[in-house]
Structures are given as C-alpha cells and as structure tokens.
Length: 65
Image 1 (cartoon, rainbow, N blue to C red):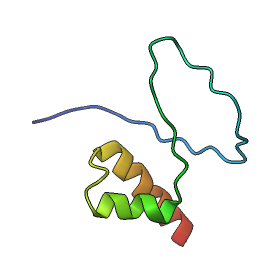
Image 2: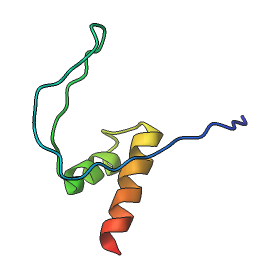
Image 3: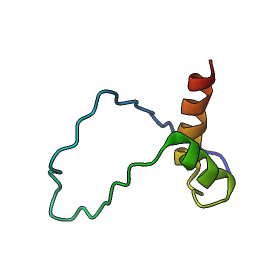
C-alpha cells in the first residue's frame, strides 16, 4: 500500500528521574535500557514496531559517527 504518513523523532538529553504525570487513561511503563541492548532487541525481533526500530537504528548511526 501507499502512505504519506510522516513521523518525527526526538532526542532528549540531560534527563533526570522524577515523578510521572500521566493522564488517567495512560498505562505506560518506562524501562531504562542501554542502546546496545535495545539494538539487540531489534535484531532478535523483540522490538517489532518499525518506528521504534528506525529511531534506535538512527540513534546508533549518530553515535558511530
């Protein structure tokens, strides 16, 4: 199929752990993970979402340069 969907990738640096301020219907668990582990998860098929895989591979490319 064809799509004209656009996505925006953001990088946050200098973050500090704090209290989450979620909406009542938000049920998200954040799991701090090293980039190397996340890339392994993409390779092993544990991360299958294309947008997430793209963002991780893009970030890895910038770290190599």
